[in-house]
Amino acid sequence: MKFRYTLLPICLCFFGCNLTQQYIDKSENFYHDLNTKSTHHKLDSSTIKMRKVGKGEINLVLIHGFGPVPQIQWQDLVDELHNEFTLYIPDLIFFGESTSDYPIYDPRFQARQLKKTLEREGIEHMWIAGVSYGGLVAGIFAHEYADKTEKLILIDALSKFASRSHADSLARVYGYDQISEILLPTNGKALKDLFRITFHDPYNYPAFALNKPSQILYSNQWEHKEELLQYLFSHEEKIKNWDLRYSGPVTIIWGKEDKLIPLKTGYQLNEYYNGSEIEVIPDGAHVINMENAREVGEIIKGLK
Image (tube, rainbow, N blue to C red; front, side, top):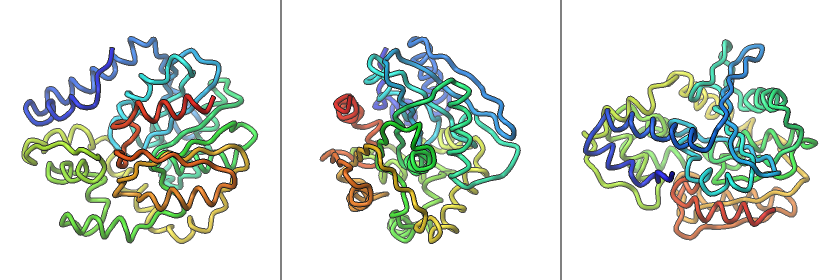
């Protein structure tokens, strides 16, 4: 059943487009084999895809980051958790198969639409976890809907403490003007650099082999994702002033070697949320949900 992320570079580097698509298809088969229920919820202005998988008594919502193909971001962690939790895995708006008729790029809109979607699923109470951009959405959700949120889990999360200046300075090290050129790669070099920045053990392959795979993985709703990033950049100071406090239990999980959102941000969140706990994964970088899924899964299971 397992199809670990480590097979991805083989597909990308040696076989290009065909096996990149096969990798995506194999991920869909993984969820199918777990009897995943997929539903497209039509709201007033949006259509949200939700996957439901697992059989545990606790409802755990997993909110993805900016990476491609949302279900792949959580696949290895789903493999670790599906026997102990009922997992709800949405495609955020402008990702995967979720769309909206209105160009609203405020992450608070994501949280509101997610709340409506979970109500359609009949979920009244839940744990909520988010990685990177999804961590910001999860934090907003927990603050606005504290009565529904039993536990908040932040995984290398974007937050009010994140710094665009740090991210852009990191991008310049790799020859770019700003971080969006890496987070939304349009060519093989940018995709290669994205892996170098976000993985603890990045793949080693020639950039030319990633040109077509970068198009397959990132072309979906690219313009909307660019607008989502620009909203975060242009509203950075306002976001820093948002009150996102949540009085329930909070667990922060961070990769010690995260270059994109450094560990110090995790400690700032630890101070911000009174009584929160922080778990640091020594050999983890930004995508510990994929690269360190077993360790992250053990931490989450230990919260029961």
